[in-house]
Image 1: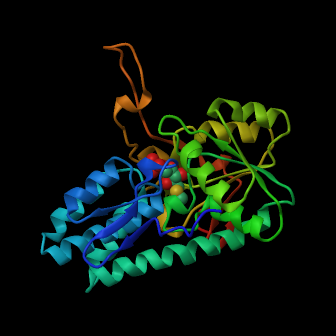
Image 2: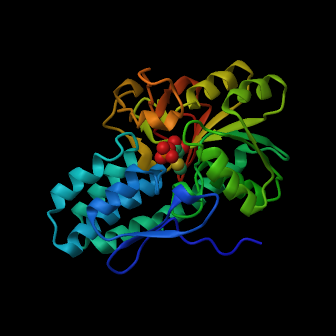
Length: 312
Ligand code: MRU
């Protein structure tokens, strides 16, 4: 029986404490950041990842800078540059920067995240039929937030309300957030799940083995285009082809009204080494996110409800 899950990220007096997701699923261990450089390193190496958790990390980074007496604007710039795609990171930084007490504000951002996730879950239950076979991509669970999850929040709310969902978990190449993190979370929650290679998703749909797809998001443009982990776009195309609903579960802090459309969303390019063995000298393109056009999204599930339009 798994023990109590610590928060993914929390303020610990004079430092930021977080679950070291690089060590999962093997070990559940915490790691602390005492300086902005340490926190930025933990973000870049994905000890903490997932858009809402990055929002909290951004706010806590400013809190850290304020207790250390660092230049807050330099800290903000450094934090925001670590991972460009997730809208929440800059959102969390801005919230703490604008506050009189950045520490109290960062703690609020973290607490609100759990409440917002639970509201997403409550609303999302309405789109989940009894015994639904759900496919998800990447990790939009408690590990990507402070503790409940967005896409996984919908699944766990459906599970808790007796709808008995089961989950196809895309492995999610190259960093394997699905196989390592989503499967670990679902297993701890007692929700039946099966990990599959990303490339199997379309065939599962063709075989009538998927009832709906639910994913998280890193940034949602004003027109509803959705940036999420690379591979999401292909899942959405396959879902549309097979007449399967494709839902995006995300907090309002992931919506970026200043970004008109998906082609303006900055796409992070990560270390080519993440793709593994490649012949020396051969080029590698490791774009970490892709953009799903709004017309492939059945509905957005937010803390405000379920809506076919991004504005709710
Ligand atoms: O590179 P990651 O692991 O930070 O990517 C995470 C995702 O793509 C998630 O789906 C997204 O951040 C939503 S998390 C609630």
